[in-house]
Image (tube, rainbow, N blue to C red; front, side, top):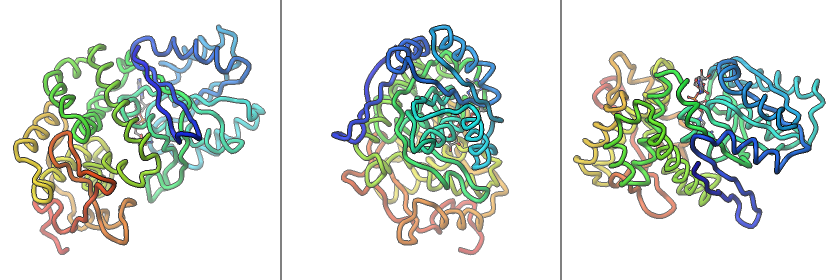
Length: 368
Ligand SMILES: NC(=O)c1ccc[n+]([C@@H]2O[C@H](COP(=O)([O-])OP(=O)(O)OC[C@H]3O[C@@H](n4cnc5c(N)ncnc54)[C@H](O)[C@@H]3O)[C@@H](O)[C@H]2O)c1
């Protein structure tokens, strides 16, 4: 098990132990018994992950003498809503869960965001432990403190920053993750390497086969590197006032494409195409080398990810989605271009203005 600590709000002191690898769940039981022995634990998980992993964890925690409530909700992004949150809160009320409780989010990114938001607001904030079980949750969603739910018209519209008090990623649970979710998770892995670590990018190029076979050693390395890289970015800029925006590489074009596809593309697929598109734009804006763009494209393809927009996307819908992006400032569309693989623009302002007419020119024959 790899271990390191993340610290948020230096001085204000939130310390978050991160444990990654086969055996991290056993460490979780030990750590909880030591830190929170007399406190009730509320495990929140979806109906896929509950029988596969959450029930076993709850059993181990009970066997070590702890009080455990296991709350289940229906899986899927469609249930990351205010209604699901309200339902969970009704259960907390019925169970008389007080301010001494600790919330564990056991699942993918949907569970982490939803259970994290419940933890952020129940009694104005309970300690939260992230137990990510999908690749996206391990390398991205469980780190950084963003929690929330969707509105029908907009993803992640309501939420709060609520930093976890621990992140426990046991890569053995990835064996049960369905193949499409597993593959699409590599979009965020490639992104993390592309914005922060050229050596890690080269390592991924050499280990794509082992990773697709879900080899534990390679997975531990991948999750460990991504968590540490994202953790360092977030420690330095928790509220995305500056450099945290490097993590948005691929996401300006990607989000617009995801929306324009009517969400038939997954987030990972859309971000994959978005990175290639933003890499092409970056070649013009920062001199991002053609050779690096080619390596980016090849690595994404080797993980089975798309690198071009599918046919039939409406250019007007892409444009509309770009203009509606939450990340826009002063009505201007912005994106975070790389300078080369592993390196972004220096300083605090890592984004540049982007004229929507330049995006996806090959599918954008419609009026601007
Ligand atoms: N907070 C953040 O910073 C952040 C960052 C990235 C993504 N996200 C959010 O994360 C969500 C996407 O994450 P996701 O892809 O993990 O979605 P998800 O939670 O829906 O998980 C994907 C599917 O895999 C299942 N699953 C998860 N772990 C499993 C396992 N070990 N075995 C079998 N099945 C398993 C889930 O039940 C679900 O059906 C989005 O809502 C996104 O907004 C948040």
